[in-house]
Image 1 (cartoon, rainbow, N blue to C red):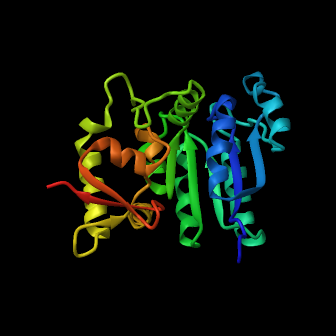
Image 2: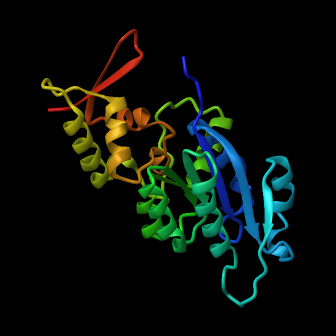
Length: 246
């Protein structure tokens, strides 16, 4: 049996993401494969990046110095783009992870996708939509961090919603519900039941979507919380099936 893990190359734009999210990012990204290449870019003489120093050592991330030759310009951008392309052609990788909140990376994401590689994006909520929509999956690091905190507090509510802002509730997000209903409808058999694995695959092929951004680590938990689908299990409770409620 082949248990080979996908190989992931990670590139961190330290100028545009806080070091405090590193643990949450690594914990989440590790579920998709082994992070073989770990590189972080920034002007390490800039005191604003001091919080990254201990993180680089703890997670065995290789730092790359980029001097800010021009004021108000991110010197790391071009270096990351070059190294992503180098990894694409000279390294044995299956996916790329780009940690940034800068939309300037949208073209390189599109280029990596064109080569048949997945692109996992992580960034703060200020990230422009262009980059979010370009990635195979994009996760807001603030939401990921909130979910980790919720787990550490031993929450007893399996389907508790972590709000996107003070008033957000996935049950009131009708655009989200329409999107998920479409995914279930397209993935369903003749009786209207859809395997959640197939639903997830369809979503991954059509949109940069993550349940994390809506308050849940797993798509199945989000679907249950919405209460707009019938749910049943088969194959000794290993397979989750869903159907749009009438």
